[in-house]
Length: 374
Ligand code: SF4
Image 1 (spheres, helix red, strand yellow):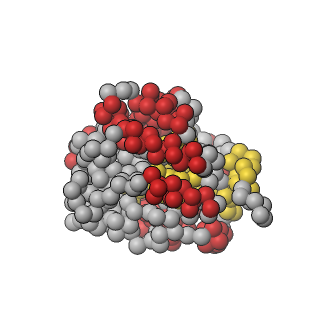
Image 2 (cartoon, helix red, strand yellow; image 1 turned 180 degrees about the vertical axis):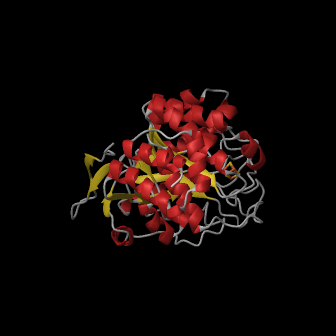
Image 3 (cartoon, helix red, strand yellow; image 1 turned 90 degrees about the vertical axis):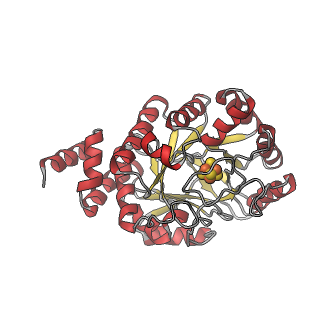
């Protein structure tokens, strides 16, 4: 074993923080099985043998977007036939469908429409919260919040606070892509940059909102960009403690302007998962998002650092437009079965990681807060 790996191994077992150089070394020079073994030490120290899932649905109220990120297959031009804007009735119908199916969460993200005002996005939250006050609304990426601020001339913090009053429950982790400007300037040069993404999440945390964080990998970035991305998130988490889950997202090339790039391999998916668990020592959870990874890899990832597999999902558009061949939804029984098959104990959680207790004849109730153990 190399001296560097021996030092890293000692640090992981002692719960000590890994440096940027050690992260790059892990990403580029350590075999997958060793990475998995080390990541599993941290995974089990924090979350024992549990794998979390939730019962949720997705809502993408519009796909019309002013930006043209090279990796995006979801967006549509203003006058494109593919473009759509959901009516209030359609939005409420989606909320009703989610509530009737026993969902605890609606995950809401979309495009940055050229003509719709900020009030339209605010109204999405208002109408849903008004009709379904117990359905947690996890809404709008930092890129959308930045767009709202550009549209209105108001501060993102003021807008976050306003939507919090209207019923916003938390922020999803999207729009992060890769923070490093060398990469971001090539794949999404116009939208909110890494510093703005970090600022929006800091402000949300200061208001008491929890959020997630993502990273889009497997396109033109290198190991040093991925590690830089994780360290920037780790630094914000040191300050606020507001992040719940890190979700590495594999790039899907189909129908994008980067379609010449091959899809990330299962080996790479597991490497990134394990390195994330090792570098993000202050994140309680790492999620293997089955829609992106495919069900089989998401299962194996439970031994490579992940302790969450996301949810039932339903109506997923963003990655299916980009060629994801995973199903549109999974039932709770299917999710439980695949977690048990992976050797883990399934626990249903709500968005804020409270255990969800279901009783016959009743919708659901919130159980104890499931905290990461360390
Ligand atoms: S990733 Fe988001 S911001 Fe970029 S083009 Fe797609 S919908 Fe628009």
